[in-house]
Image 1 (cartoon, each protein chain N blue to C red):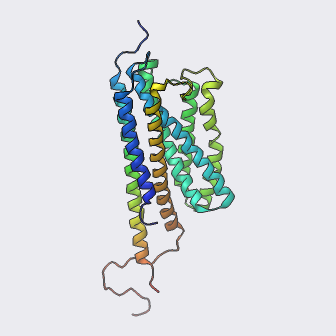
Image 2: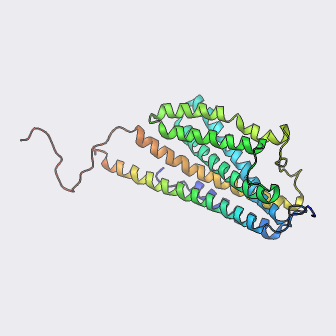
Image 3: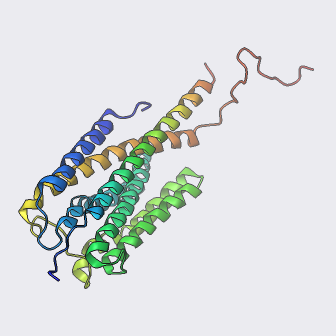
Length: 51
Length: 238
């Protein structure tokens, strides 16, 4: 045994793929929630009684 | 307020672009490490995630303090956003660490001081987010979660110093002094990429929290008419 790790690219690819998936999914969820809240706020302002 | 902040979107785009460049550098251009070989390339995503998870939670702590001192709602919106981002980054940190631990330590997880204190950090801040979801009163929710965040923040410096204070399987902190100069650039680029990404996302997420809170605190509105042109129902006209 040389004490040196050989190979291991599958772990490297997994770590980068998990990072991209988690950050991408979170960014998408924030954008979707923003759209949802904005639509709700627009709907409420539409229902506001006019002066 | 109704449009996503241009600054936040620009920061997210800049962060994503930097992460692409830094990851390419780390995967292709940077040399392998002497003992860990190619597996060490996980460091270019793992270490920036660790720094930024702690930074996001430190920002949450600052927001909690500012909310309690000023009672300004924007600090509660930022607190919610920063805590959520910190929990996402901390969970990602645990996943990346697990993937790195298997080929280097031979196990996916070990209850060593660094990993245990990080797990406590995830559950503590995740618990505060759960608490926020169960409290309907915006005032109580803001005060309780600010106080809980300040208490939970005690664990963040413990996570950072755990590898110095106790014998740990985990390596010491990765800094320019402890990392070879050949690894500096991809590490720095990914660190700034992650920083810009989370700052932009926290800005957007705080806008979501503000919109939701305004809806909660607004007075009740009349029901939406189901059919256009239909007269509203009034009482007493039988």
